[in-house]
Length: 81
Image (cartoon, rainbow, N blue to C red; front, side):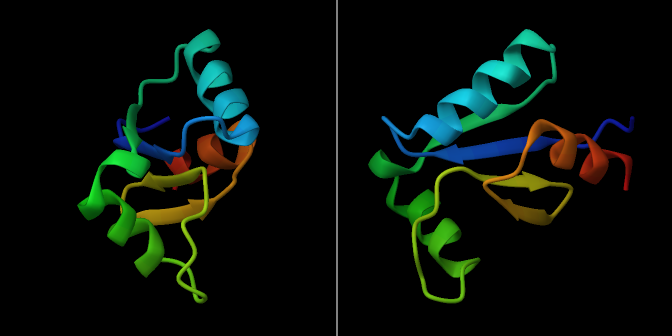
């Protein structure tokens, strides 16, 4: 795996983001979590990446590539390039 930065944009209470973030911690996959419900700039970033302008949680960024509600496997594949 490459050393690509992984950012997880999440909404509190979202079971999908909770599961993904917990799995990333358990597998020691380094990432940065951003709670976009409290961050207008982060929320705008998430909305800009979805055709309908939705705030989808989780939205994951790996090396400039945006993934919507990905699995851990998809995040790792994106990290490999």
